Structures are given as C-alpha cells and as structure tokens.
Image (cartoon, rainbow, N blue to C red; front, side, top):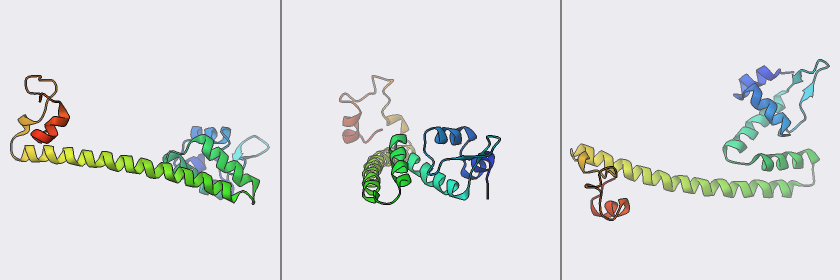
Amino acid sequence: MDLSIGEVARRSGLSVHALRFYEREGLFANPVRRLSNGRRVYHEEDLEWLAVCTKLRSSGMSLEAIRQYVELARQGPGNEHERLALLRRHEKDVEARIQELNEALNVMRYKVGIYEDHLARGEADQLWNPSHSDTAPPAGPEQEHRSSGSA
C-alpha cells in the first residue's frame, strides 16, 4: 500500500521536515519513490526502517554511522561482518553511556535521599547553600557529603 509523506509522519511520529531530512541525508534503506507529479510515495517497509532508524538515532548513533550501515545493507549479501562490527561498536558506546547514566542516577538518588531525610527531620535549613558563604562548608560540597551529609 502506498503511503503519503503525511501518513508516514503521522504513523512514525516524525515530522514531514524530519522525513525530508532523512531522505536528503540518505538514511532510508530504500530510495524514496516519487510519482510523476513529484509526490513522495512510501511503503510499510519504509515505516519499519524508520522505526529502527529512530531507535539508532535516539541511542546516539551518528548520522554518518547510520548512513554507513544503510550503504552496507544496500550492497546486499557479503558484508554482514562489517555491518555486525558497526553495530557492535555502537552497542559498546551505548553500554558505556548507560553506565555513565547509571552513575549519574545513583548520585541523584543519593542527593534525593539527603533532601528527603533533612526535610522529614525538619532540618532543611542545614542543607548546603553556596550563596551564603557564612553557611558554606570550608572544604566545599564534597567535604560536606562526608561531614554533615548535606546536599
């Protein structure tokens, strides 16, 4: 079934502008077909690819890496090892970012716990406030974590 750019935008969640950008950048697995009047025509496979492509983008894969992957796939059989290597490199990058985000999340959870504890005890005024130099701990916020448990 032929789909218009508007239908693809609605179903994919991408804007018409984004779809045109993806086309210009060569990110579609198959070239976008056009009618004699110049209107773009898409198919279900294009929607399926867009779902993969948007996940690759949201995972941080560069446009260049997606383009490389698409070019390899367009070449057909024989370069599966290259495609796999590209995907594995990106997988390692994603895992490293997830680790960084987990570390950041742990810090945030720790800080939230401090605030909840101080607020529950009615001691919010003891939380570190860098705008009041008379109440700031002498060794900075890191020392504060160890000494008073403040945020």
